[in-house]
Amino acid sequence: MSSQQKNKFFKDVKRYFWDDPFLFKIYMDQVIRRCVHGQEAIKILKAFHNGPTGGHHGPNYTAKKVFDSGFYSPTIYRDAHDLVKSCDACQRQGNISQRDEMPQNSIQVCKIFDVWGIDFIGSFPSSRWNKYILVAVDYLSKWVEVKVLPTNDARVVCKFLKSLFARFGTPCAIISDRGTHFCNDQFAKVMLKYGVTHHLATAYHPQTSRLVEVSNHGLKRILERTVGENRTS
Image (cartoon, rainbow, N blue to C red; front, side):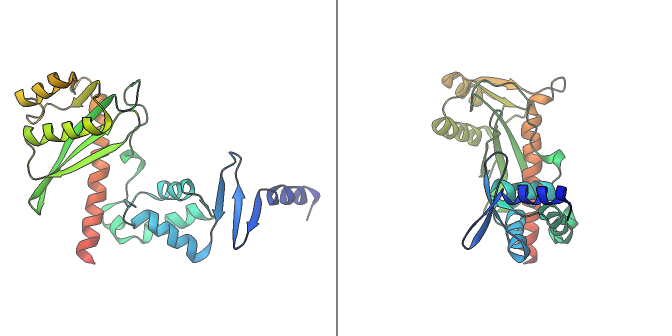
């Protein structure tokens, strides 16, 4: 071993410490992650990929979720790629790519929960009389709220928004497309009552609705994989 290799080795060793029974690594940002390997690393990857909150995302995003949760493995990205390649649901329908992730700068917003984008997904095959999903996305934090509904009319939209306002505070604006469930007298009265501005997305300004559309696309892909797994299991 050359002197340069020795120096690198001892420098790297300083970033690790043992706290029985686990080995930990200290990163440059002072975040401490537990080192995992072998079957334990694969088990953790599977939990973040196809577990109850996994979502069948792509390999890079799945590996990032593992890192963000406080784990480290030197082969995590390679293992994540191998896992996605062997995932039946992802191979049949395709994993969620970076195109499906939410854009980081869709619209300028001053405060969290100031502006929400809303849209419907559906209709889906009826499950317990529910056929639609109403999605709301906060434009600053990218926080997503969803509600499974039997219909997609103005009444359920207004009820959903009143609940949203009660939990997160009254926003400055709501952004939606020009669907009849958003453009009607009942919806307008709720906006007027709470002092909320209703912005309509147009073909000339598509970025106003892109955040919700991308969120909906990702949610739909997750639902397709989850439903597919449940049907085959």
